[in-house]
Length: 410
Ligand code: SF4
Image 1 (cartoon, protein in one colour):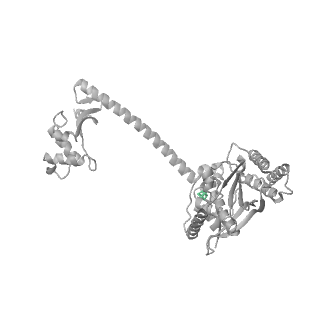
Image 2 (tube, rainbow, N blue to C red):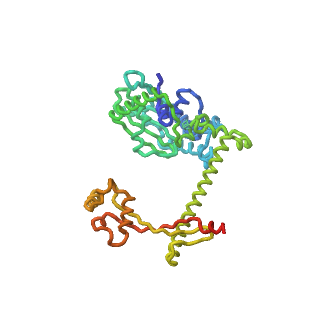
Image 3 (cartoon, protein in one colour):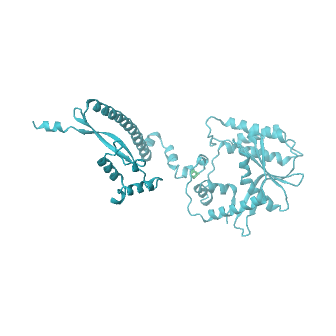
């Protein structure tokens, strides 16, 4: 039976396929991102510091030097820097400043007794033993009043809102493990050190919240244990995924990236996508052009109507085509489901119109309106006038000139 951890659970929630690569297939790939590289160096320094406090606490200079030595020894060209506006030295400087700020804030480090550094605890979430959770706590402290504190160092460049930490799952799970290991502990505080911001944030959990969280995690573990499908779930975190090269969503990108330029240009997949994209761009241009043409046609229609009226004619002739002006009407009446529909139907029945047809349709009303001249002011029966509105339409239609064909035979 697998032992779960917060990061294992989070991996499944983020992307089941990423989880499968790491925990089902056991594929070992670990990319170094500069943020996590800097975080690891910071954690090393904290571990060294608290391993010696309070009696032999190293000085700030020693800690900065330790950070630099470890940085230089472990840095390699494969460390990924996503933010192109920053260099490795920028991150080193951020780490050094975080150590100085931390040191100056907490020296001489006597606010409690260290119970464990990178302390591992394994907890059974229920009696079955099939829902085990492993927690590794950055620093576990016991305060003078007997309270326990779970400390976690965060080197991220964004500071969460307090409300987010009050819902944070990772340290709450650690609290479940701590209370399991030391059942008589009364008070446990969760403490985050957002060291880039020189900020300490705290939170507490109620017994009910911890119990609910336990149940949630048991359900999540059951879901993972019974999962048969592990679909890829793309998100903004994909850039940090260690498995991008073998993920079906990104594998082609990594394959073609490695090709020499001439092979890249001939790669079939690349060619297909490029061709598709150029057709889409062409389609977009054509649609834009059609939209402009249709707008121009509408303008010409309005001009044709005005010219026909001025000449007192119904047709305008061009070299090969003609424009015919047609008068029509549009009947607007309450549709099924509209509020006035029932009253409208009653009026139609009272006038004897409804009974003559199964249903009122637009065609029926239009032909009645034409026959009875409802478009003329006052012609529409007053019982219907409140429901029916008749609009006059003037349409312009383009057709080929037939008279030219007749000339051909002369
Ligand atoms: S790259 Fe994204 S979608 Fe693919 S496995 Fe990783 S997290 Fe999942």
